[in-house]
Image 1 (cartoon, rainbow, N blue to C red):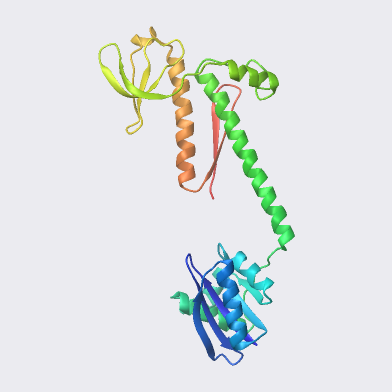
Image 2 (image 1 turned 90 degrees about the vertical axis):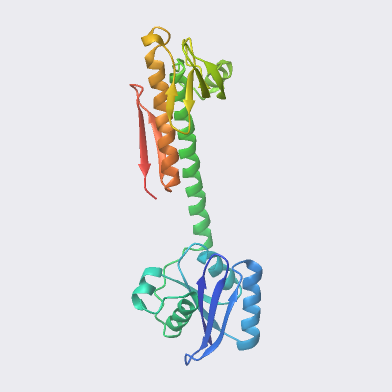
Length: 268
């Protein structure tokens, strides 16, 4: 019987092999992919026989290593990373030492193992998570379309915008495409992304680097300020969602009955 400690990193798997008395048998590395794990199983089986008991810390990728080694006949436990650090806070300094600690915990039968669902249960959970992701994405896109229609003066005239009649309506609408160029305003020229708001005499020029807007609407006589406010509302919502995604957070939006937009941000 041999005990194996496995410490997983991005590019390699540190491996420490010891016997039942705690004497080290091998310290090596393997690639954390199917071929590398198969070669590791073959090498340890040829040199030390079996059975083989292994432990690996819970982290991204540990489940794949667990499944591959279990299929090869090993007995593998996934250890709770926080509890492992609590058991050996001073020892866990390098990948090699981490693998030794895990092998020692396996030998002493002290691995703080976490429960791992069966492959069938995990597949069902993954399908459910993916469906939730698609539903959130679909809802965000629908809300964005509603907000865009309001910004360009096209309130939704049908009960189901995404049914047959609503899709035909969307196909008929002529919404301006964003473009970057230099335009002449009333008293000056401006360069940036040009947006032509509904019923505005001059376009709005956006500098995406500074967030500044340049426009001439002659105090509301050449364009309704409400159209500009709707445009800024959409920009604020999209900017908020982009910044949330950069932080690994989930952002969803919902257009309310009064035209305002509710943005919900959920921390990861």
